[in-house]
Length: 422
Ligand code: C2E
Ligand code: CA
Ligand code: CA
Image (cartoon, rainbow, N blue to C red; front, side, top):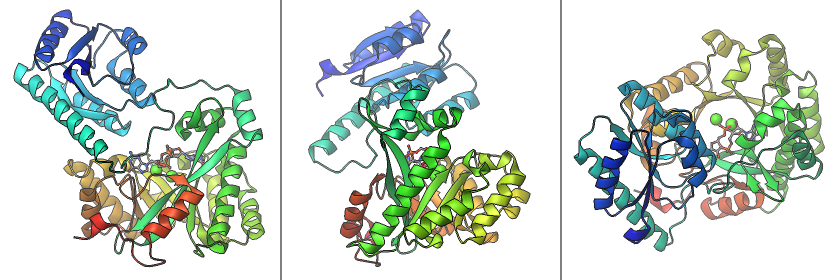
């Protein structure tokens, strides 16, 4: 990228500070545009901005809201957070930015030395040139591509969602789950996407909450369950000839339908799939509502030999009693801890504790959000059983998953990924 195209957006409400930052950045070769408040920044935003410097305390639209905005538009470039606020607030904002999958380059604590700013600016330059280099080498992308790239999030109304269901626009993608010990395939998580005729492929976070709000989530759950179970049959009876476990996410609302166990049972019989191949993932927070009814349904599912997984563990507030009462077969450590464990000792301690807890309760432990080899190598010694994340593969359609598996998996033996052979 030539320096004249290196654009820096500075969102900072103090004109003096904005001026100072601009001057330092211009020396580093950036073309700077400053915004004194969030709304004008949002209006001018475009994805080609090389770097964004964001002050957290702004009037009206605050920095945290802008973090969410950048996450919604899948902003690809680096972001620097700046603030004179308390250190712990800055750290929380940084964590939030990372959770929202923003590339947070660092934080600038005010008052700051010009040298700290220069350091971050030059880091951004290095990152950009490394990225250009790796793109020119044609290395495969490690991360899942933005699903609805760089467009503001469309707003859907009830009729849009209903049409999507009626016109069969939802499709399940599959992400592999890998055995930490021998890197063989353990299973796949089914993750729904909306193949929208106008907006392209849309990520679930943009429509699942609406489906719940409009009472359409049950319909979607059954679409996903049916596709996933059919896929299981295809993998078993097609050329792959493999019995692959598939996990499906069940919303808290669906967990209240008393006929859920019978209906899933019927579906698995229809497609000749064993219930032990199906895993139902339930988030920890789903268990805090109407627990008694959910408990009954969960217990009946377990009796029918379906597996139950407690998802996003560590982010909700389930008590030990609940964990003990619900017959879960596996526990998924939330990706926010896993993604931070290479840098953050507290996150590592949390992952370690959840692994111990899971094993004490006889559950299989899955770490999700494994993006780097370093994290993967940390998981083995901690005793984690299964890993899932972009390091292995992003979610992909059923046929692509089959292809991925044939390439990476000498049937039922170890994955042959060259970068794992030390
Ligand atoms: P989840 O159940 O926690 O699913 C894991 C999410 O993490 C997926 O996002 C996956 O693409 C992403 N992911 C996987 N590996 C990595 C990694 O290494 N790094 C990072 N940063 N992310 C990774 P996705 O597909 O966008 O799904 C988001 C959420 O939407 C899911 O979170 C789940 O709660 C919900 N969801 C997806 N499909 C369904 C569904 O069929 N029904 C319901 N009720 N919810 C669903
Ligand atoms: Ca899940
Ligand atoms: Ca999860």
